Structures are given as structure tokens and as C-alpha cells.
Image (tube, rainbow, N blue to C red; front, side, top):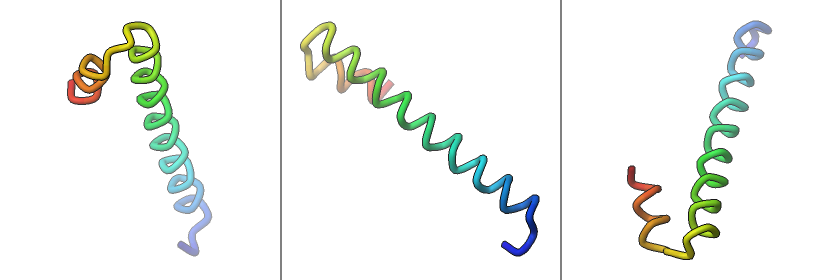
Length: 47
């Protein structure tokens, strides 16, 4: 990881993956809060 462009690209990928995972968690939480159904939240995770 001595190459600066590679390091920047790698960090951008890591941040993008983190943001995607956070978005998924927020979506599942909103579904659970709206419907109060663990089964529906579980379905959202699997779909």
C-alpha cells in the first residue's frame, strides 16, 4: 500500500461499504419500528 492513489481508492471502497451497511441497518430498523414485527424485519434482511 505504498501507492497513494491505491490507498485513496482503498479507503473510498471501505467508506462506501460502511455506508452501505449502515443504510441497511437503518432500513431494517425503520421497518421494525413501523410494523413492530420481528418476522417482517427478518424478511427484510433476507430479501
